[in-house]
Length: 126
Length: 126
DNA sequence: ATTTAAAATGAGAATTATTATCAAGTTGAG
DNA sequence: CTCAACTTGATAATAATTCTCATTTTAAAT
Image (spheres, protein in one colour):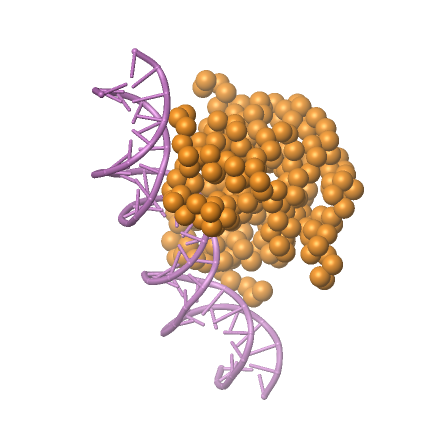
């Protein structure tokens, strides 16, 4: 993977974000400062960075993928009202992979847990 | 929700399937026996049945949703090679919701765990 | 510094999954 | 039997993402 200014911008912008943005959200954030980054480049770089293990693509948050600069083992909560994504520590499900492997007999290479509900702020407004 | 012949076919076909098909897969299965069921009707019925809690829409299995006639609490494993989806018992992650609620302070209404890897059959072929 | 092949880019077309539209047919309570 | 609410098929529309391709950039070797 060669260096590119655009990739640096994508990574830098994602790192400044705690809300686990979608590609589209990231695109509009990037646009304000660097209008010379195309959508194709953004998607390409997000894929590449995820493939290289530098960032993580969070699936299960339909209708679009979210991206996380934190690659340490952890899970996610998405607010069904505001759409913000929050981290959940991985110690809520100790040994899930080991247990699931034992149960199924399959080798597990990857897993994700997604919780849904209302975040603190959105519960206030109810 | 009124009765409809098409909805009965969709539900019946899904119930006969253990591989948790996507809408598209279900469509081709249904087509062979009931060519008079349109794709729009299939999607509509899957949504309605899921909203009514009669079936479950499994998210997190990009690029398309899979559907499950089993609405009891359980998780899923998807084979990265053949794409088949298998059930994983929910006792691999006891009290995850309770623990996640305690950790985050949010109220959780829904959650899913998706494991990825190679299933038994696909491991043989390696 | 110059060459050069591989990698990356921008713009937009293409693809895929899904939802929306709407006129026509079906269902079921009264 | 009637009528309003529900459902359907065909197809258009949308949204997210990937692909295409001509042009530009990178970096390793001269």
